[in-house]
Image 1 (spheres, chains in turn blue, cyan):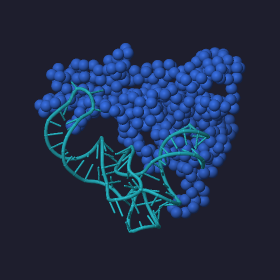
Image 2 (tube, protein in one colour):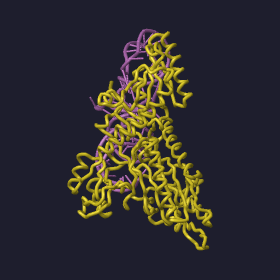
Image 3 (cartoon, chains in turn blue, orange):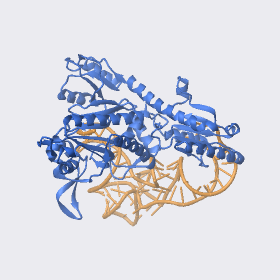
Image 4 (spheres, chains in turn blue, purple):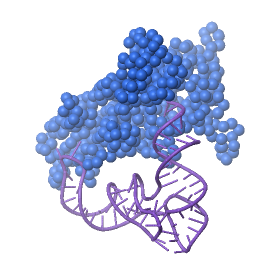
Amino acid sequence: MASKITPRSEDYSRWYLDIIREAQLAENAPVRGCMVIKPYGYTLWEAVQAGLDRRFKETGHVNAYFPLLIPKSFLEKEKEHVEGFAPELAVVTIGGGEQLTEPLVVRPTSETIIGYMYSQWVQSYRDLPILINQWANVVRWEMRTRPFLRTLEFLWQEGHTAHATAEEAVAETVQMLNVYADFAINDAAIPVIKGVKSAREKFAGAVDSYTIEAMMGNGWALQSGTSHFLGQNFAKAFDIKFLDQNNDTQYAWTTSWGLSTRMVGAVIMAHGDDQGLRLPPVMAPIQVVIVPIYKKEEERAAVMAQAREVEAHLRAAGVRVQLDAREELTPGFKFNDWELRGVPVRIEIGPKDVANHAVVLARRDSSRAIEAAGGPPAKQFGVPVDGVAAAVKALLVEVQASLLAQATTFRDANTRTGIRSYDEFRQVLDTEGGFLRVHWAGSSEDEDRIKADTKATIRCYPLEAAEGEGICFYTGKKTERIAIFARAY
RNA sequence: CGGGGCGUAGCGCAGGUGGUAGCGCGCAUGGUUUGGGACCAUGAGGUCGAAGGUUCGAAUCCUUUCGCCCCGACCA
């Protein structure tokens, strides 16, 4: 039977688009570069929201909402910011049929409008810190788009905080980077690398940008979340001032941090295989699907009765379970369909299982091939119905850990070290790809040249770099600085 | 914005020397099936992207226009 999914080895980009279509995550909208997020895809986004929002609240943040439309002049108050975002702004010039006296931009990000509001809210050091997050949509008029990875409009959260001291703001920036990494690793099962952006790659208007970088299934990098230390740049542009304990006027120190629907793309590309999605159980909209199997009518009744019994056990245990009772489809079709949609665990119940009051458990993160190669058994037979909830919950934990382990093994196997020359760098990039972890003492101009030659960019300077001093592959200078180069989305 | 391609049924496509539209999948109904993507039969579904022109007659030829996709430049 011909697959609906282009194999990754044949065309990774088509594979990605096939998965999104066949798993019913999203569709292109009538407007170029915009997408409709369908219920199954949106539920994944809701899992991102739930995982992050809980962590934001645990770290003392509250949610609020700022408006979509921003006076154009606001963007122009911070020089780097406007230079960075001007090319991709959508601007409203007509409202209610009248030409507007001042054009309004559709927010590409909200530092400016929020900075303006904070300037009104902050008078005293006692008003600080302000720790606010908003869940919102933003618009950036990108030339080339891809579902979830880069769309004209996207959903995200953006945190904006203001602090009395630089130290506190830096600590906040790092804390939120750690929150993102914790979410990525423990919820999305993606082993991200925490690091600092190079001057070329940092956020327009930031002093420092921190990032979590993930490796996709083709070895490319995906910037999956960023946390920015903005220094006093926006405080000065928007006049966020306060009186300290000594009655001296001080500018506040601000941060911003964001993570978007791009994370859904990261989950697809970090875990998916040629059969389709593989979703981490923590995020999966459906954790367990039950597929009933029967031939005769009397078998159907018994099988369905046991299927409902199992469904009830699992639901009572807090498992997100769905019984696939569609009568017009064969079990084989359903197996493929749910594998395509990435459901972590499948339960099969047929007449043989009814006879034993048992079920068959199948896990999405394994397969006959993986099992043959020493991996976990793809199917467990004869799991008693009485213990099914405990068995399934244990299996979900195992699958979650297994996906993280597989992604980590893949990332490490595709991280190249020991590169000593630019020639070697180019050769390794072309033949093997992946992350190139190198000593780096080059300038921003050097970085530009490498990008022009190879399309690889500095993804980050990793925070945890224990290599010690070495020789920069490009300049030949001695340095302790480590950079990770890769091609990126 | 530069280069290329494409707009015909829900989706994917064929038709193109002008004569009033077809295939696959999907969909509906009935029957037989169902432990790895079932099969048969019957049926529904189309202002051929839009506008103008040529013609007795245009999906087809001409002109204009709109949109989308891919590659590049650009970018979270």
